[in-house]
Length: 346
Image (cartoon, rainbow, N blue to C red; front, side, top):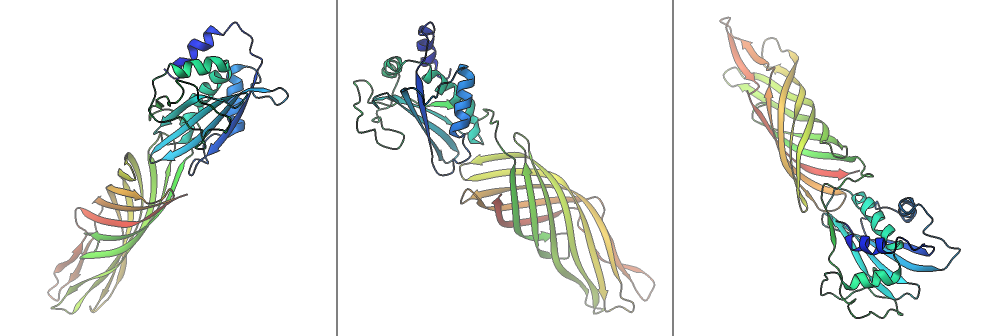
């Protein structure tokens, strides 16, 4: 479907030798530095044509200027064509909401190859026959060259070609993130326990994000007022989770993760005839969900809630003068934590 308008013209001229040269210029807007560079695009075009298309030893008959832009979640490549006299031939544009700008690479190389392989007269004629917007045609930098005189039928810009969001992006890198969050836990320690959590996430292209996180919760006390004694508890944990659900809504991102955690619960008793300190390992399955709001391309705020199902729970008790055991504290059957903090994209 892409550039079907060009195939007709290209086939019609297939028997005519093409010896002209073209010039290619790229303009990259903010946030599009990762888009394909001129040298790579030139190589991709010439590989498709199986000849040198961009030569400096002969005059150029076609000038192609490509302007990359990033707006919200969409990437766009706007092409503006001029002939040898710098007269405007027309515009084309590609748009995609794929995760990475390289989703434009293959389609862009095909479009440019067909443009270069078509005579300027054919480009001008085909441009007049396309459905168009009502906006006046302008160059990729916002204004046409001084020598440009738009011909009748070329004063409107053709509709952009939309590439599917699932278009493969061959140069899409791994996404790496660091997170620092404040946390409040319920059920892991007596009462509400404040703490901190640090996380690192790595997302390969087309695969779910993998997150490694570690946290610590401040000591909380459990008292027996009748004895004026009790124990002080603190908790540290390390976890690994996989995030298979991730949806973007503009600057907002909703995610769901599942994984496991390993923790160390330390208890230090006080006020008894014999005070002890002990450490207990805990193991839990977990599920986490939350939202992330980006306020720049690098920084975002994250709010999440995590529920854990401990498979190993310690029971902390003390002995009475009568020789009985009385419960002091036990980790809840289901624990929860609320996290709020900052995320940085590396």
